Length: 259
Image 1 (cartoon, helix red, strand yellow):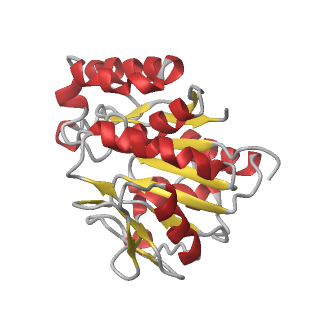
Image 2 (cartoon, helix red, strand yellow):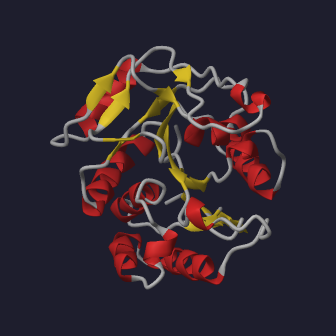
């Protein structure tokens, strides 16, 4: 590996993006094609939000269809990437003194991860490990843990955060396909300003007047905190590689850290 692997945060949006071709999925594909093939992918997905910090540590993680009400075609999607138990154990050492349990059978690859990787690495031949989001911990905890993950980039590991900076399913407006409500745009732009200037200041977004609408629950936002911590540890900022909105209350903004 000649240089550090980039790290990304992807606004994954609607699971149907797995099956669609649009400017977001095209950007994900272009990113995957533009970089050296990673040794492995460490994914922090909004959809593994539990009361512990854990790493998937099975040789062949299952594809998890953690949603309902979508077409059978989406439930038929499989992403048969291998795992890497040895690397999972190594990552558990890297993040110490934080304790990270090794999960050998309860989780796998959820749609927050495979809906993106199906476009980035469609051959599913790069090992994938998921890191859970510990729901008991503060934003500062997640930022600090993200900083520890920067060390993995020199080992060829692609760190992938997958969520949405703005994610409010209760305020979806079906008539706003491809558009964002004013409040969603304001919060997303504030986040973009922080990530482009001082990612370590991501906690400042906690005082934003649109926070309660943009982040009614923390699960989709916290993966961005991992990228923010990693960027701060690398003394780098994050660039936007695709942006936009959907259904009024979803931000599709995606970031990359290259430094």
